[in-house]
Amino acid sequence: MQSRELVIIGAGPAGLSAAVEARRLGIKDVLVIDREPEPGGILKQCIHTGFGLHVFNEELTGPEYAERFIREAENLGVEIMLDTMVIELSADKRIVAVNNREGLMEIQAKAIILAMGCRERTRGAINIPGFRPAGIFTAGTAQRFVNIEGYMPGREIVILGSGDIGLIMARRLTLEGAKVKCVVEIMPYSNGLTRNIVQCLEDYDIPLLLKHTVVNIHGRKRVEGVTIAEVDENMKPIMSTAKFVPCDTLLLSVGLIPENELSRMAEITIDEATGGPVVNQRMETSVPGIFACGNVLHVHDLVDYVTREAELAARGAASYLADGGKKYEYVPVSTGSGLRYVLPQRINADAMTDSRQNFFMRSVRPMNKARLIIESEKGVIKSKAMRHVKPSEMISIQLGRDEVIGIKMLRFSLQEEGDGVERDG
Image 1 (cartoon, rainbow, N blue to C red):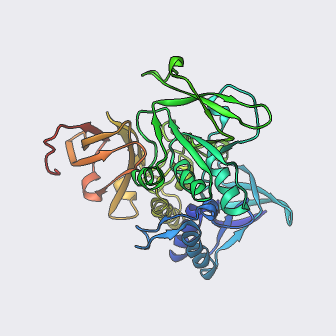
Image 2: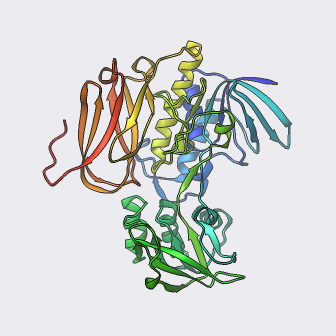
Image 3: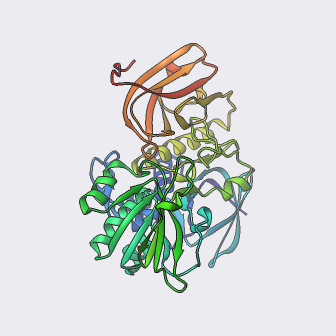
């Protein structure tokens, strides 16, 4: 059995960022394990720009963003073990992995950072009626086919769901000569970033049909078309509005799910709202010495936020290794009205690795004007006026150590306001 100081599972943007920060902090023995033949994760197929504005103050493509961390990891001497699948993870930080070189191997780690990313929801998760013809893809699979493999998934395309990958693929396929008939979204609002709605749909005159869904897929060997219909306030199709849209391809962009099979195997507590582990301010899970960051923790809209969160997880791991796993009493962080979740879910001011702590959250619905209110048992700690809040765009706010020291609880809520939004409190 190998003994390692820090093992990071996943060599995507979260894993690479954590590895680089860990080496900068002086952790000499850093091993990154990934099942893919190349590092970089999903960024390898994201050839559009929009990455790095917060981290590098530049607009980079996905491969360019990943390359910077790959090169830095190499320069710092990070060991990256590719083509290797982790098949077991236990609460005592024992890892079982396998590849075609060493075969089955056991690794005992002193600390672990989980950075496995997320996966797309498939047709089976949303139960669309119809046969199983060729021509049905998740948006990410289609993106890989076009940008890496050089294959077109089809020529006449309907996209179900307005997640960012689907929006980006609407533009990408249009540029490659396909006809994107429409993007169909069951919610009364888009689930993508506003900039992607503008740059990927409006700029190319691609219709976005809100409060609609696909109710049937036609075709036996190949998709021949889909039936779409409006939905009521309970998300039930109104069949009197159904209409047939001819197409040869249906792309699904209906949400992402954090990859937490290994987390559950290690008996890590999972937050039902995020689908990822419950963590404290150091990104440490309910199992001491195991940390999590990136899309395995909660689904992000910007990779720059993934990097910042991964750096925090690396600092948390370094603190854990330095203080021998010192135990702290944590204060619960809860959500009030207007918010779906807040992360981290537990905090202790004495265990903060920085003087200020970032909190990430998502609203339950769009709001044009709202106020974010942060309270403790002593009353309101801070409030902030927010504009154009929507569930697809992450909200981030910082609290200083002096603002949370000595408190017994912390609650975040988001309240919609009228036109007279006050100044920040």
